[in-house]
Length: 311
Image 1 (spheres, rainbow, N blue to C red):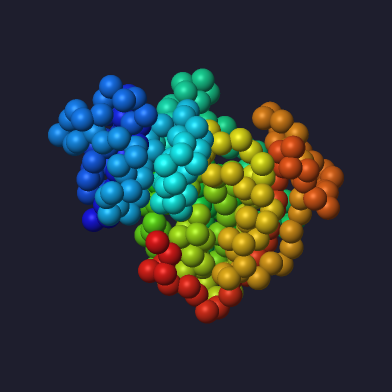
Image 2 (spheres, rainbow, N blue to C red):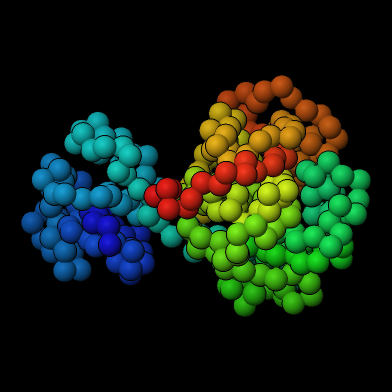
């Protein structure tokens, strides 16, 4: 088990401690509040930040979303902590599930009729005939039933770390989909199984994008296609810890996928975020001060990376 020090021992650290202990060997905890130094917190010694580098740790864990950037700056600038060893460790799953529980209470039956137009446009197809007899999957599917609109595939698979919770909370039984619970590191599907893998508004929610891109490549058939929508310049939220630019996405994909097509468009707001894409109002680039989307169709490079290579 990897060794870690928790930095910032407020309410969020207390809420997430059980999950952190299941994943890491906690050596000590630390905090900027000098009144806490020298005390014991849930059985762990509270050390001064200046003492952190006296320990042989793998990670510094920051459970606070609200103060993450402030803490990151303090650790790297004042205490010369390696930025690569600082890891976000708040419970983004809880934030995501709370969001969907609110949506379920508002809508009662979650709407999913918008997915047909969006996914067909992402795939650059006029209808779902290309799915006939194929295995179709949606990574980061959520509970709405993103593939419920089509009966062409041989199998429709929704993949999400919260899939089991969605099945409990929402009426998913009429979606005609198989819901699979993935982890932050593994998709529970055999090699070379999926013909078309979609992902929509999901990759800013993953903890380890490199690992999950590799997993998507692994489960896709050699003839398979990755059809993805990536959010660009979207502000981080508690349930969305990743922030992407076009360059970051290109670097993420370059060793695993060959790009068939790419489209850029600005976001048109929360109600109809993909309207510019649907209306073919594309851009050559997205200004860094504006939010947008990158839609990609890609074939996997047949020499797969091993998930063991991504830590």
